[in-house]
Amino acid sequence: MNDIQERIENIRRRIAAAAARSGRDPASIELLAVSKTFPVETIREAVEAGQLLLGENKVQELLAKAPQLPAKLQWHLIGHLQSNKVRKILPHVKFIHSIDSLDLARDVDRIAAELGLHPQVYLEVNLAAESSKHGFSAEKLRSSLEDLYALRRLEIQGLMCIPPFDADAAKSRPYFVQLRELRDELEKTGGAPLPLLSMGMSHDFEVAIEEGATIVRVGSAIFGGRQAKV
Ligand SMILES: *Cc1c(COP(=O)(O)O)cnc(C)c1O
Image (cartoon, rainbow, N blue to C red; front, side):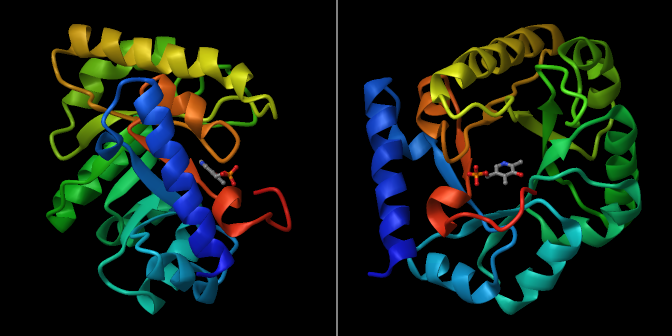
């Protein structure tokens, strides 16, 4: 086994242990390997370790890499999506984690209808109201929910968040709790299930699992450090 394969095995073990600690079925938690900035040769090593769910944060990068890798891979877009790139990306992704405004949701819905698609999406919530990040505020999401549910092409599966970075994973916990509680609230008021929670990264995925994550987005703990912060 090479380094990447060992790291994936290790992360899978840690996911299973975090699930066991919180009385959850490990099979209810998916690992999304975030391959941004890494070349296809490196990603191939992850694929050989059985890693089929891959995440990219940029449309161009995803579109450049996907055709060079096996068709069985499931691509997830996790970064901000500009409206003028929706048409290009929709046919290539299984999930969009970053529906961060009602305007974007409307564009995705309209273009999905034109393309005959039913995209599965997460609504991104900017819990700490950081100006550097995209996403609905909790308040905005509450007031937009009816309009979002009127978009019949969108399969809204759950919520996503990126807490403010802190090397101490314990600092992320209150945000993960908030996202779960917001989900519970919106399920009641919206009358529709939101089963999935996309939360947790390399430094805090175990805490996220303890608080209900159904998919963790792990990059550097699998592929190593990235050159620049992206
Ligand atoms: C880069 C990125 C990740 C992965 O971050 P790591 O700290 O490398 O695990 C997760 N989610 C999003 C939205 C990202 O952009």
